[in-house]
Image (tube, rainbow, N blue to C red; front, top):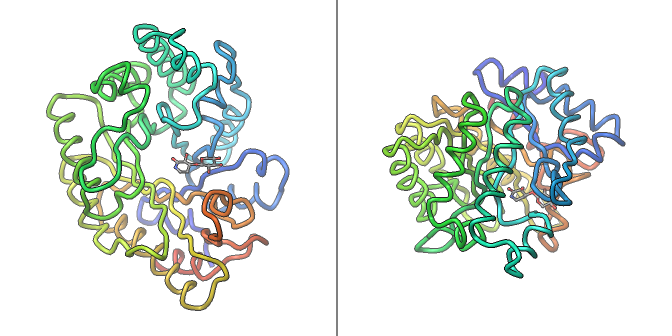
Length: 321
Ligand code: XIL
């Protein structure tokens, strides 16, 4: 019964979790699990723009600095999440852009400064950054999402963001990250083509993050290995960055078994891919998972139950590792 991080280390795989910093500071068994079971951590919220800079020019580094410091003490890598995302932006920014008080030229300066400031602050302490999160749309013909960044900085905003991040910390691995790209589909293919183009232009893009938010009512991404392999062949790192497997409550033995299988499909795909560096779950216990709050009627999406006891999904990960 070895901890996940010990099993992962045998195959050079970082096993990570998103960390909820309020749970971390209030719940000792939760904090202990983070330390004993994981070799990488991602801030579930505290590195997002709205959390880091709730008021313009006033940074709230405390919780993120704590996470980074404890990770160092625990011998864990930090996965930085996230520099640019259309959600959890500070109100001063979205309302300033909406009212026209912040024009396009100023937004460009703000975005560049944000990336420089944040990546600079954590320089040498964050192994990889999700530089842009969820940049593409869903559906049959994915295109760059119509965000304030795309609207005001132009479609090269991603290449610009990657270059700014690279200048601020040349050793950090720079990722794009998205959901619903775990298998070979239109959206993952759009990313594949996009990554090829950026890398041909020598834009510093080093990795592709596959969130892995699965839902048992949709097909299990059994071809995830093939999907990761094509990014691997481009010379990129790959990682599962936010894995959870939700279903409609109540659970039953079939859902439990389906969940075991789904976690394993993603973990297997990563283990089969030479440069798949990390397998991270989006929370390890049902006690604090984001799922019930965001998906009506669904839950039980993580490897440990609400009492922090291992579920079959946890045993499955141990066996696969
Ligand atoms: C979620 C967090 O888990 C919630 O606590 C927060 O309220 C909203 O964001 N994709 C991502 C993550 O990239 O940042 C999201 O995290 C989940 C979906």
